[in-house]
Image 1: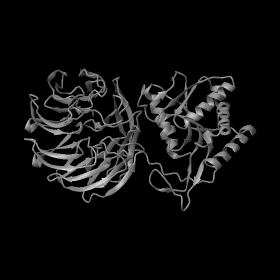
Image 2: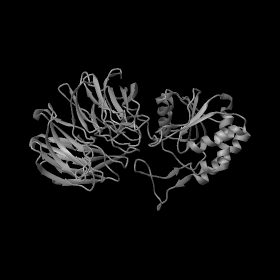
Image 3: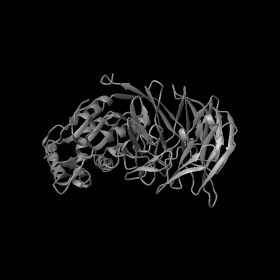
Image 4: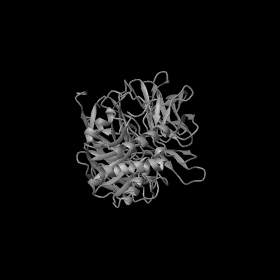
Amino acid sequence: MTSYALPMTTHIDDSLNILTQKISQQAITYATEDFKIISPEGKQQEWLIDLRPVLLDVEALNIISDLFWDRFENQLPFQIGGMEVAAVPLITAILLKAQQRGISTNAFIIRKERKQSGLGKLIEGHVTDDPIIIIDDILNSGRSLEKSRVALEQMGKKPSQAFVVLNYKSIHSAHWQKRYQIVVHYLLTLKPFDVSFNHAPYVPPKCNYEIIWRFYEPGAFPFHIVPKSTPLLVGDHIYMGTESGKMFCINRHNGQAVWHFDVETHHPKGIWSSPAHHDGKIYFGAYNGNAYCLDAATGTEIWRNPCCEFIGSSPLLVPEKNMMFLGLEHQRPRQMGSNAAFNMQTSERLWERAQKRYQHGSAAYYAPKDLVIFGNADHNVSAYDAATGKLVWMHETDRSIKYPPTIDEKRKLVVATSFDGHIYVLDAETGKRKAAIKTNDICYTSALITNGKIFAGSGDRHMYVIDATIFTVIKKIDCYAKVYAPPKLIDGYVIFGTAGGRLIELNPETLKVDSHAQLPDAITNAVSASPQNDVLYVSTVMNELYAIKRIKTQQET
């Protein structure tokens, strides 16, 4: 698609000269020996343009809004929308200028992240059926325009034009325009400014993506942008719990619900427990305090055990022992939680070990020593004899661990990520600490060990890649949003999502992002794939499940 600058007239030329001068004076910062500017890739860069000071300049806004209407007034009717923060002053100025000219148009604002309280909206304002022009301050990579596009796509809307103040003319944005057939109009490029821009070579993605279907269940609770019920693929069906309190069985080919089971809870978290499957049965817990076993084909209840007040933990099944392990949450003054073992067939509680805090954590199984290993809200990792519940070892941490540890039987390792911001590497048989890799925020995920490396995300927006032998950080990959979704090895790639809604395929050898896609809401659960690895099943925090076709490009094939 083509990008359009405004045609030059005396009026437009004078206005652009003023705007250029304001950007030069207010928006460009240059690096010096004493003042470093760091790029998102962690490299030093010579300059940075931040248009926010200009967007608070009344004269600049007056010029931008005048030029906007000079270009678009003859295209009415249409509506305008864009992503905070830049779009807010721009859209406001454009609306006020429209009133001065005696015209009107509809407008809306797209949030970077869905509002976590109130109505939980992603888009503020009413979106009509009129054509849409997306508004932004700068077009470089196209990331914010893409986030706006997918938010509108979720509503069944397709923008065809965009308006930006400054167009970097990057090759990445050009490919974005071409792929989605969006015409970009702009006021300025980098040419008038004393900056040089080295265009990074465009590397085509190894896979393009196409959404095949989207399943949606109303009733999501957007307050918590955290891991929830991870969808489980079994044969032709996907099992997923929702905050509406329903466990769904979904046909993986068409996204239609085969059955649902309502746990009838009024707790806003509904079902956060990730389902587990064995021998035609589905196991999970719910925030009504019940553990369930259902017939996987029909959703018929086989048993329920009212074992506590709340269950956010996910069941670990060890079928050869006929045992299920689960964290429980109680309302007891000195025992707010526990780790427990149950008979998979009868739901009989076999053993239980008390915890002082609500136990949201889940377990992993270390078969060589018959150990069930929990990450605990009591600020530790504990290993129990699976048969008896006898404590074998405990390793203390500074804060809670809320996701299952990762087991590497070959290296005899346990990797657990903690709310204290550390990725702990422990000896699976003794609990002895081998390493504690510090991140800059909480870790709420499970790690992946593959290709001689440990991959683990952090709330500091990075995916940490750690040598699985000497436990040093090989690379920190900036993912631009919190990484809570556990990475999975799919088709030879480390695939995971971010709280910014970005789906990432990472090459485990080169540690480069080979493919990526954008969804409108946070991805905090693990991704699963079809048997042929040609379809990814990706859930968001809003009770959505997407089937996304992976179309390998010529470069990959």
